[in-house]
Image 1 (spheres, rainbow, N blue to C red):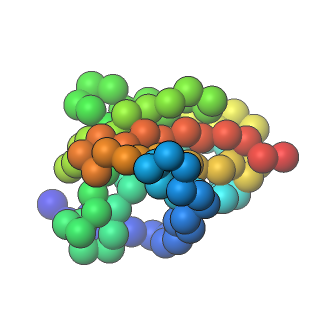
Image 2 (cartoon, helix red, strand yellow):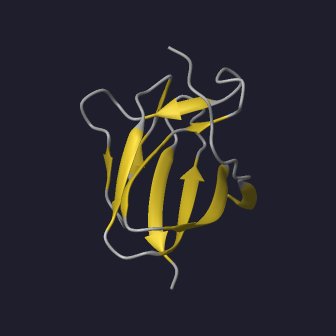
Image 3 (cartoon, rainbow, N blue to C red):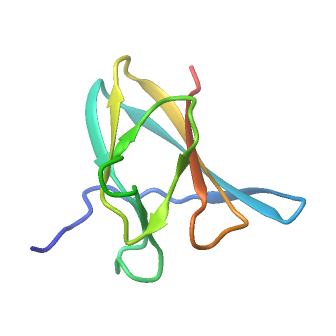
Length: 102
């Protein structure tokens, strides 16, 4: 099976705080299910997803990511702009936080 990205978003470095690296991107989403991963277009340089069986992303709750994890699902109830924040220092299991901006 071959996956292709339909849209590309660029994460920017937000801050370096006590050895943590924080990246974020703001994305306008329509209501409904949004399936995604944090990855580069080659699916190998960077490829973070969910732990198998735990693919739901909940607004305002931290989610631990894993390398080569499964696709995540974020169910948007209100169309809006959301900030996706990925925080290290772990290159094996960073965290993801999704927050509504408007």
